[in-house]
Image 1 (spheres, rainbow, N blue to C red):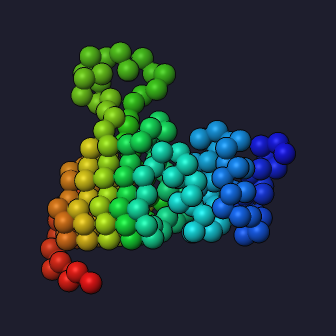
Image 2 (cartoon, helix red, strand yellow):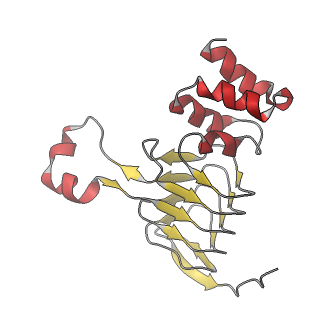
Length: 178
């Protein structure tokens, strides 16, 4: 099977494949194609499979909606906890650089703007539509990030944050442990 046939099978015939068959098919794809599958797959349950195969650490019961963009150079820089809900069109930028531009050689850009830091999204977090999360951020347990927010600083546990840049607008009482 060539790559196009593998992608087609994983996109449209995944429901008849065993977990072992999915694993075998994924072994023949580069990480860029696996991420594309994660971003575009029609099934919420399948998307985490492809992100996990590209170095994203995922907890249990994670829901990833379409167009989840992770900029991490396919390195293990993103950790997502249990029961996290990621809405459509969310971007996590664990790394940022101007690629081939000569700006990469500018002293200020090199020292201050080119970054590669882990992002941690703890358990029971809900991330709204069109959120951007920058490098080096931790989003605390039980937090909600409002739609369209740009998260440039870590968010404490049990907080609701919104805006550009995101700021805490409310705190929540922790849920009882069950």
